[in-house]
Image (cartoon, rainbow over all chains, first blue to last red; front, side):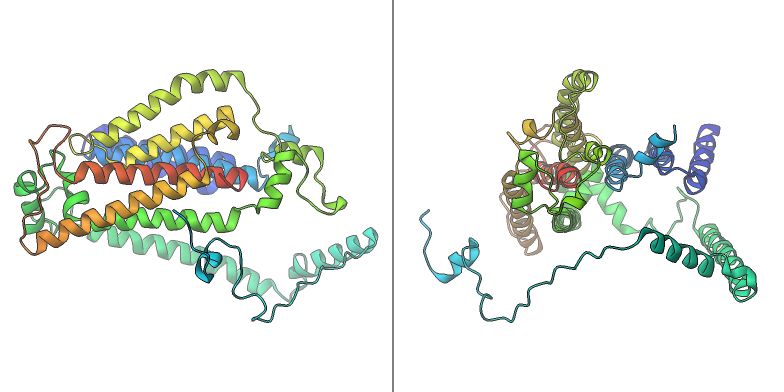
Length: 84
Length: 328
């Protein structure tokens, strides 16, 4: 494994830890999204492009959009605007 | 087709209810709305807070409080330790002596191209050797949509009120505040954002064409029905966000979803059952494999890819539409 892969794997761990420790739900979703993107690059490095495409489309795309809609539905995004 | 007017068809089209009059049905009572003194409510709240949250300090609950915190930390660390130990026992990836390197992948790699006709071995595996796994996945997606439909659907009466712009709530004290109503997408749609509409106008055709490409070339290059369908679904969601439900309802309604999913899943099941039946009994299936590398090759894989892609794209769109509007 090259240095590039180690950097990516380290980024994955940092993302996974910071998802749980971030206070705002919106930030958690964005970090989760970047986790999926980096994961798809890792799949590419591990020579499985099929999984990489699926991870990018489902993990980074559709899942995060559904999370956003859920946040809007439970009105968790409104609270942030009032604080400003 | 002229439909017959017997009891089954009347039940099927929802005209009669066979249970009506034969089962004891108790009407639900409306809960009486009780006027409560705000001061009393506040006092109750205060007592609850004092009793539950700040009562720990008077010595009764401090023991459990500490124990719970220590136990939570302990269990977390134990779980991390167990998982790490398990991972350390896994064989290193890419080793020749790994237990996964038995006769199955050898067969797939060596004779996959002759037996399935697919240049992409992964697609040959998931849509030919292991096609029923993929069928199960498509069914799981369909069942998940049905579950979301049960949870999030608005009934037709409410839907009509939403379309006319009347709030859904019956009692005046349940009416939304202005901020809540503006946050509610069911009432104010679309927002007609110019930037979003322009960008979507460029991007949506490209995204959908790329998804179609990924599906149609599933047996030649990386990708396939699932990923291509997810890409098309994401494109549809972007289009919906930019232009609103009125535009998408011209080509995608609940009926479209129902029939596309039904036709795709049934075709998948029948085609693959036929192929497995003939294959297991060493019969001639009559499905040409074609020349490997051409678009029209590899037998059933291309139509099955299209079926999976249709189901996945419709499901992704349906999830989003159900979450946003409670219908299609």
